[in-house]
Image 1 (cartoon, one colour):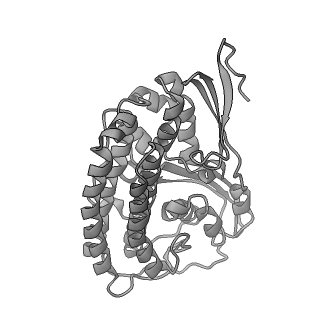
Image 2 (tube, one colour):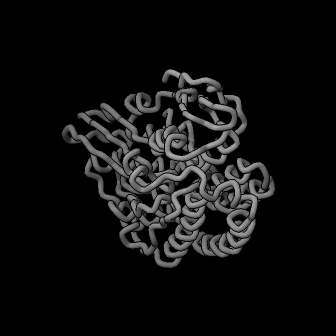
Image 3 (cartoon, one colour):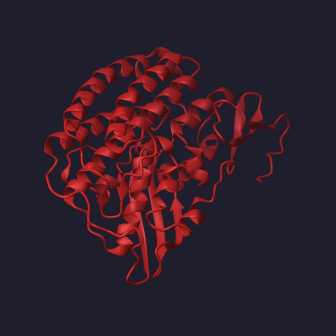
Length: 372
């Protein structure tokens, strides 16, 4: 544990883990009155040993526990692990399966960003209605997930070689209808949040993260792009069907809490664009390459997969031997990287105690993701 700053009138206080806006973690703050001098994220309250669990499950069995890392974004998390398996085993994925994967990942991205909007509205001290809006609108996506996979949260739908089932009859029309509804709703979100005077006062100019600091500290996802850095794994190292899909990498130049909020808002628009493209242009063909549930690598392999989740890049570093389970798995999660950035925020710009919930929710942490 880092020693407290020894200065007159500086006091160390514990914020969480029971605090309603801290999630499942504790944050230590060195404060002088309302001014925060140092932030220390005391992580590990939800450590569940997922990496070790994966080493003791077959490749297929490991898909279920890894999705539990981020329940609001299980499709992107699951795809990162499945992609690592496919690289290690040399499994090819049919084109149609890749398009279905991209559709699910963008639906999950919107679901996660809506949850982040609700928390950000709550953290500014008002807007209970916005959280209820996001909860209601997410049901549009959860209904689609349920029809396609049979589950609303953790799907176990991706498997090495493809997906478990094809799109049901009429599903593409429902996707287009959902896209049209959500586009109308996001006009309301813009007026209620981004253009709201209270939200502007709480977020504009707060917790500025300059581009050079974002790169130096290892920021990722909307936190990085909110500092004007156009880095997105879907464009830089395309996977699934992203090389064939038309979308833009969203950045904002202001580098503050409002910029990070706007990035997520505009990214939802790009995700809706991708959903519409998949619904209208998805190619035909097979949905999976036949693969045994107990498949073994032909030779030892070391692979790395990268996937752009709603919170940023997740990396899966996997070692395999001639066994039906990985020998070692190491997860580089986006929340862990961004929490390191959050710890440095008080050194980069002035932050008050009342700003802490607003700043931390601009990072959009998911503590099960950081603790693993």
